[in-house]
Length: 324
Image (cartoon, helix red, strand yellow):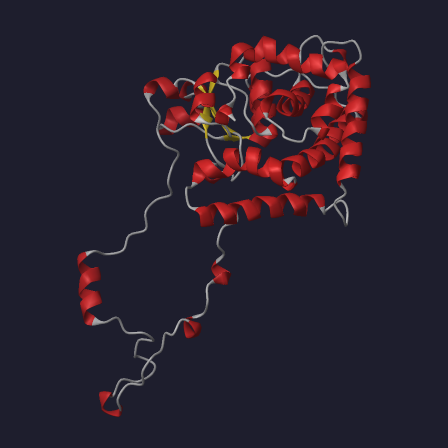
């Protein structure tokens, strides 16, 4: 959520703060007189309780058991966290699934963007035994999502991904065409926003109706703003058609293979596709399932989703957070 900016604070003159002119008999020159004198009672109070600048807050220390295990902070709820169930957020689910592909022993922790050191989820706190910084300071280092792949590579866990323009072109279908349709479906279709997005992202954070209203407007405005960066208008038909074309291209790319690009083991691209196909087909209860219906027309993408859910999530994949 947007944070307050100091520049938005009104100047002192608009706060009703005023200074009074010193009497002529005071003989205190303007150069030596304080701009704003502190009343004696307050001065005495602060002498008893002086202001202190506290050190920056560190991440909360975990129990010995927790700190011996890698911890991935994602959008989920306590039940989903206990079962390591799929996150309801595509970016979180992408990295959660990728780490499962690498057979990393980790647990998921329910979190929010506000709790993230980088302001975004997911982030990983490695086990202390695997972190030199943690061993030295008693605090684990934090690995943001854009560095998870490098961290895994440095640990000898990751697999090499295709490094060519073809790979980037297909990844852009997920990052742009499918993501835009996702944003529209989740945030800008009112019945989906109120039945799916709000219970997952807003209701758990506050019971205040006014705060919920403000958060709702902020989320929807952010989604709309992102969509308007690529077009002057938001056309639902165009968004769905572009996503359908992306599904068709991905289906052709997968063909009869188990994994994309014909690799023997699933990689980051497979996790990126699963992050959307799982949430569209199994992870949410859509009241108006246009995008879901388009996706179901591509049988090999559905089978790809099922293959990952069975192999890496098993029954936990059914333990959906929010229990919708």
